[in-house]
Image 1: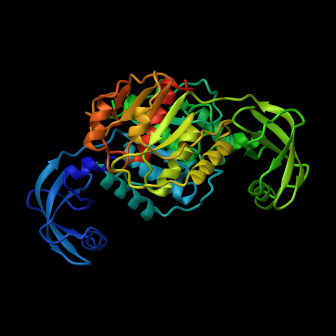
Image 2 (image 1 turned 30 degrees about the horizontal axis):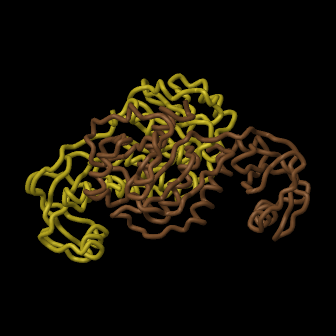
Length: 246
Length: 246
């Protein structure tokens, strides 16, 4: 629905790793050069927008562009750096398309960090980290943000809980919770949202979570939501109540 | 995440068109017989759950099952009929996978009716109504609900607005709205949520919507959400504030 706004700001937006600043030259990657030259039919002299999760958004001019390499030069900062609230998303990987979707939606809705966790009933033992990170980058490029949440390697839920930072609330979308439990009293940042796998959490995991000091169980309505739906719904509720949608 | 709960209720769940009641015999469709016999490896005598959007959920026994036809008999009602709140979703069809996704998520989150609308910048001129309805049915079977929202034929937005029912609020996820507009004061049912196409609404459509008597514009945070993300976010906020998640 929302491409108009981006178009009005006249931009193809690309995430880069390098520092951005006045006059700074930026080497584009081979996929970026291919995308600009062959997909978007850009030429040398065209203007694009760059961001790197640190230095805001910069207007840049393409100073060289081939099919496999390119160079841009920063002209002016067009938006300040904007960081999302200090909200993490922990989720158990599910089917590939739905896992991709969770990463895309978490980036759009605004999270600081994405942590895939392995649970006892997690269906998939491995994730393609590079692929998930690429989805987060593409989502940030699309949604007009200036921040790409890092996607961390898959780690066991038990290890994440053992290493849990002091003071960070853990919001647990608990499928077995009474339907009348309201998500009204969500904790502020720093916080994290935990979404389970399709098979739910094991009894041992449930007991561990229920006894966890920083736990905030929430219910998400009377129907049984898929994991990807639950992730988007929980992120929306938190952003609206305690995050940067306020 | 949530299959356990459904499994605990011991069921393959199927939507049927016929009336359900004590002792009622139900003819299964060819795809249902195929699914039960070949995908789920069920046999005659197995128990499944049936619902039809009217008579609640019924436990039924397979009395005949071939690869292309089958018959079930209702044993007992296992859940009362539960209707979603009187909330409609109007959305402009986008890419196929994302349109499918919107229908699936709207069914899970709980809507009474799904109305695809054609706007000036709608990318796709046609929808596969049977395919979208099948997605809604599958989502209802999965999510443990007893209601399948009807997916209406594609109609121009102007026509839907011209025929708008008296007293139904129209919540407009407006991409151009100031970021500080809060979705705090959502109207109660009867209501509808309107999500635009990827190109946004045209100036004429925006003027028409802004002047519409029952309009409630809402903003969905500082990042630019894709249409499918916006649909899930808006449905979540409404359900949590005024719907059956309360």
